[in-house]
Image (cartoon, rainbow, N blue to C red; front, side, top):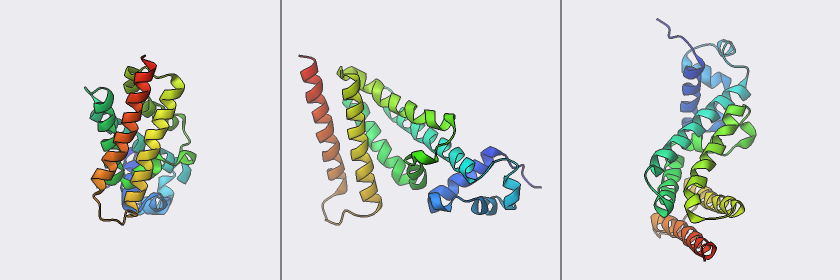
Length: 191
């Protein structure tokens, strides 16, 4: 008996392709092959490849959001930021295609998909409220931490760290430098 094809089943197949082959591997043809159906059958459920990629981006970002939320529950300040930093990196390593898609803003088409990054920023903002930063300082800090994490992750995924020193120590040092600066800025604001 054939299983009924739904948007959710299509998205799940695209998610598998995403982590196996990257964004380029998510095509109408590859998704249909994965589902053992003919490509035209997908158009009963999705408009086009752009729609498929948006649905996949939505689910990828939702996965990232949920993992960051779970990692930071019950933690405050530095502990929460450390947990988020490690989970962000872990997500990228465990779900490389999904991580890649969470960075491709131009592929996010629906309003629902575009709202999830705001929710992710909300996690950071809530934690940073305890530091008494201005709104601008909060945004600058989030950008700085995210840029460090993204840069480190990309270099690590591309195996661009060729020296023998332990990567974990390098990662920890970078996060520590950023969080130490955060503490310094917060202390100045509280004086």
